[in-house]
Picture 1 (spheres, rainbow, N blue to C red):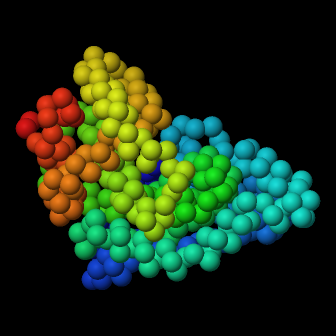
Picture 2 (tube, rainbow, N blue to C red):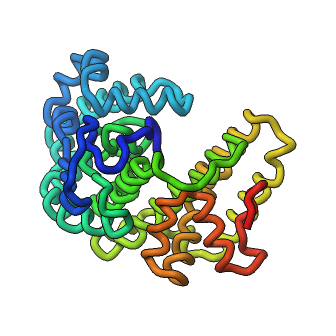
Picture 3 (cartoon, one colour):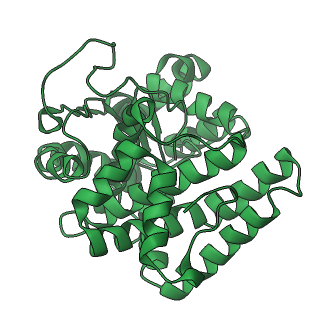
Length: 326
């Protein structure tokens, strides 16, 4: 997921300063201090309560995410989860999955840097700078999201099934969004006049390529529990989601903006159509034209991404965006 996605243009640091290093020189520190306090100073965190929530940067970002997507306030759920951890015996807490996962994430930082950064950079123009922190935390509603300041990962999310490889793979997905956001101001495509449709096609490329880039990293970080991978490997699921997405595009001129937003969230995000259809498009482009052609679509934009894909598949497999010329 992405929010607060206005990122500094490619060629600048997070503070706006110019840099000349290549993508491969990116520094992605693992910021674990908030997570370590939750795990190792749990009683103190509970005592501080809202003061802790409002002081820790990844929790502030989580609150911003909730506000952005109109989700219920996450603080009460966070507090209840911390209370549950405090209620455990010292032995049970020491053997809790979140403690083990925290230790594994810290221990594997060097491995992730050495493997994930070159992999990510192979999908970007080399002027992209991925130098942002990975914030690790626990007990927030989104399991992972990208922001203008870096990415945020909830180590306690049940989705990971207690397997740190799932987290390390998802970090690749989220850092793709960091690079994608930097390229947005420089794209050559002319946006669609309908802003809501333009947001939808951007999600197809942004989320779809993020899934594909992480999928291609499975040798290093297998992600055995990733639902998106299972859906992507089923061409029947890909076809069903493409049909649902095309149906939404077809209805877009007959429903209100609010209905389009709600249906777009349900079909595109909850049901994963943006992610899986977009990832399949990346797979086809890379297989038929090579990775260089896939990377070139990032400089052009999502409309060029869709046009290129449509040119490579039969008519019944195309993504049908209203107003998109061949």
